[in-house]
Length: 218
Length: 262
Image 1: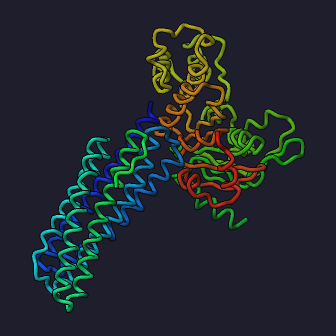
Image 2 (image 1 turned 180 degrees about the horizontal axis):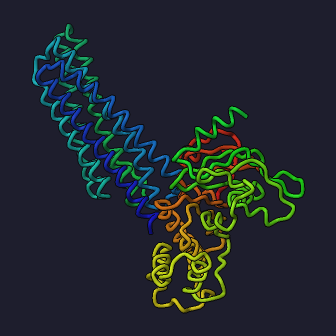
Image 3 (image 1 turned 90 degrees about the horizontal axis):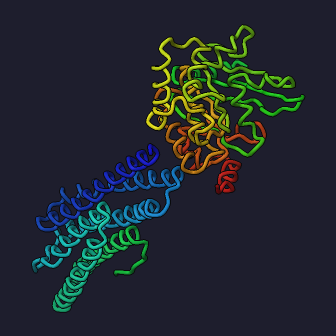
């Protein structure tokens, strides 16, 4: 039926835009991490500029979703898919903001380098990046199993976060002069920990889409 | 008046198929359509929505001048089509109604075969000498050829209501109209048949301009590019369907849509 074909075409366009938004967010996390590793202020500025594009894309996708809901009256799985799309863009936009925070931290750390390697922060960011990729894929492929396994990886981010905060606090107690730097580092680690939580929210939304079930995976 | 004329000339461009301007219709001295001003876009589907008695059918009939079938009707204002005011005295009504087709809410096939339903209309209007080809093309355009190609001699009355309605549309298409007016074409059909008619209407816009009166606002939102909301014979709001359904400008439109849960 033609109306179904047209609705499917509209959904395909939504998918394409969501894929683009996810890819931009992943790229921004990687760039922010690169800025952190290399104290690259210019790259940090690029992350901020890209975030504007991500935010505009959220508005575009959400507007298209609202129009589809208003004019096509989708039901059942179609309705759940569009509701899930709204949750995903919201969480992706927040994750994009955390990439910006990471980039800002990169700029500050360039001014006052941290005396130890930032392996844990890097690992958290890379894990978060991979999770974003798989969570968006789980949505596009309607893969509940992938959504669940992706959400489970949040535990590794949480573990790294706890260990990193403990390390920074220990360093601060040895050297109180580093208190401001320590606060910024803990704050950055918090953002990455929350990034993982937001990806988990996306995974929960995907499970709602595929099964109609509300789950709490955080 | 000057402002009205300027508006007319601005709006009546190549993108406009029909322009209603300062259109009023009275029945028995009672105004049922008041100062209608709508530019219907070419190769688009425009829905008229509104409660019963809001003037949807009267407006459709004003476009093909069929309100005049009722002795007590009186129309003022203009309807521009192909550069002419259809209400000019010298207008050829038969030619007008070939160019501006009308589909009724209940299917009205002629009491003859499927084939004859299309060939009669075509012969009356001297459309083509190759009637077999015209019937086939029209049924294909109406989405009926595969279903009815082996049943052309069957009486149209034996078809399902949905098929009858699509046959009426195919019959109208045989006359090569430019505008198709549809008065709640799916309202008497079951959901599946109505869905098929909706699909057909959406396909038609590539070649025709379609103006549909819709009792169902959901149907209007699914099929149309533009919507005109009528209330008590006046246009309350007109615009892009997505915009109107998502973010209506007039509180009366908002109220109507939120009450229309069917």
